Length: 178
Image (tube, rainbow, N blue to C red; front, side):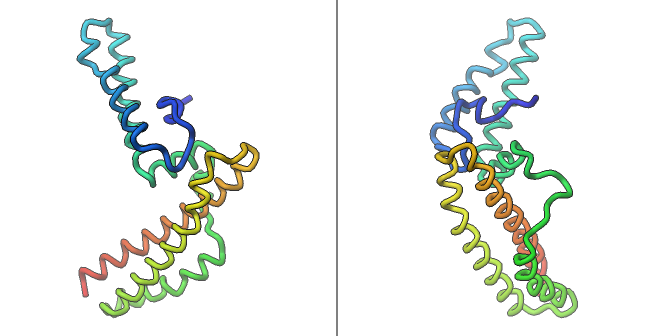
């Protein structure tokens, strides 16, 4: 069983952790598990310290990045299994036109179209962000039996956001060409 990063840092599972507390825990454990302070220990203990130092680095890297943290929490709850990343049909219909415009750009680069798609994607992203914000903020205070519904909302948000990021990446390729 992998160590839960939130437990490792003695922090509650949340999408919006106290950044200062997170950093404090990281620095405290960095000092505590620094290999140089354990150079006189036996090889097994040195191996354990090295493992804990690596765990600390990975935990901090994951929990300090909002996207990695979101994916981590969803993964903890088994909500990001490969091949089960279906998006809601209404969202796919909404972005279908954007995808068609992207395909047209392949054959006919047009800076105006790139700009228009970029604006639409930004608007969709801002709407998504605004819609999920109360869910993310309220998550830690939710009763345990209500959390699965919130996690499903976060999962849908996460998948939509990743989809929009892929569109933005495609757009940046066209932007450099036109």
